[in-house]
Length: 364
Image (cartoon, rainbow, N blue to C red; front, side, top):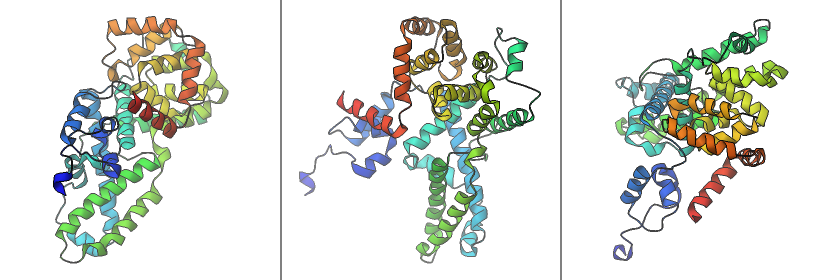
C-alpha cells in the first residue's frame, strides 16, 4: 500500500487549511513535496502584501503580549479548580507563547492578518507628535474641539486605547487582548489548549476529566470579553460623536497631518461606507492600487495622494522617492469611475472577497 502512495503527495483538507504558511502555494500546486511548498511560500510571498522586519517584530509583540495576557486570565480562572491549580502551581513560566512559537500553525490566517494590521497601525501611530509642516493650528483645532464634552471624552478614550498598543514591552509582557470577538475566541482556545496539553502530560489521572474545567474557564473569559475596548472601536465612536462635523472637507487632511491614522481610517470608512478595520488593513497591507482608489473616491488631489504615501512609509518601506513618483503618475491616470468601481468591490463581504481572490490565484 505504501509503495502505491506518491512520494510527492501533499497536505489536503483540514490539515492543509491549518497550515497557513503553505496555503497560498498548495492552493495552486498539484503534487510537490510539503517541504518544497513551504520553501516556496517563504521565498515567494504574496506580492500584494508588504512585510518587513519592523512589522514582523511588532506583530510578534502584539501576538505574544495578547497571548500572555490571556494566559494570565486563564490561570486565574483555573485557580478555582483545585486539581488543575495544583498541577499548574509549580509551572510559573509562560506556557502558551512558547507553545505557539514552536507550533505556529496553531494560528489561523485571519488571526495572523489581524495581528499584522494591529502591528502596522502601531508603527504608524508612533509618528504622532511629528505632524506635517503644512498642518496649521486651525486645522489641528478642527479635530480637537474643546466645546463638546462627548467629543472630548471620545478623544480621551481613543488616546488611551492607542496608548495600550503603543506601550513599550516585550513579547512575553501582557497586553490587554482587545481583539474582535472571533479572534479573541481563537486565541483564547489556543491558549487553553496549550495549557491543557501540558496538564495532560503532567497528570497521573485521566486528563480528559479536566476538560470541563478548561471549558468552563474559557467560557468565563469569553463572557467577560469586550471587543469595543480597542482603539479601532474607539475611533469609530469618536466619528459617531462628531456627527455631521465628520464630513467637513478639511478633517481628513487634518487627521492625516497629525498622524491620527485610526481617526483617518474611521473618517474614510464613514464617507465610503466601509468597515474601519478594513480601511486600516488597506492602509497597512493592501496593494497600492487600493490606496489610490480610496484616495480618488474621497476626492483626493495628486498632492493629497503623495502626502498619504509619504505618511505610510513606516509600514511600506518600498515607497521610496522613485516609487512614489511612479505611483503618483499612475494616480493621475486613475479616473473617479475606475476608483469607485474598485471601492464598490472592496465593500463586498470579506469572505466573498477572500474566496474570489483564492480562485483567481488558483486559475492564473
